[in-house]
Image 1 (cartoon, rainbow, N blue to C red):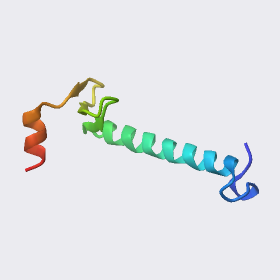
Image 2 (cartoon, one colour):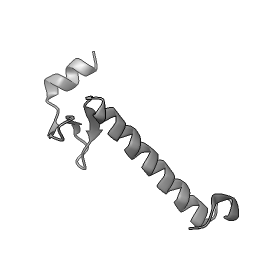
Image 3 (cartoon, rainbow, N blue to C red):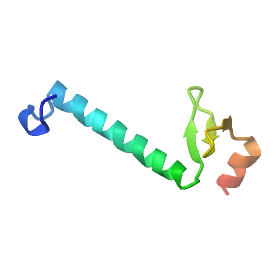
Amino acid sequence: MAEPQDLEYAGPDWSEQLRCAIREAIAEAVAEHQRKGNPVYFADDAGCLCVMMPNGHERRLTDDEIEAFTR
């Protein structure tokens, strides 16, 4: 893989490397958050709000839980 300084700014290779670096940074931040025992909240493919517990169990949030978060 070419080094970022060797790539044309905003060229397709540079852009893909940037996207990859962002994905890796997000994945590491989520993993660290979970290692600290925190749940991770996300939207599933249907757009529903979900939670992943530190043990890896995933579930959709109930309407009551969503309402409590938005108060």
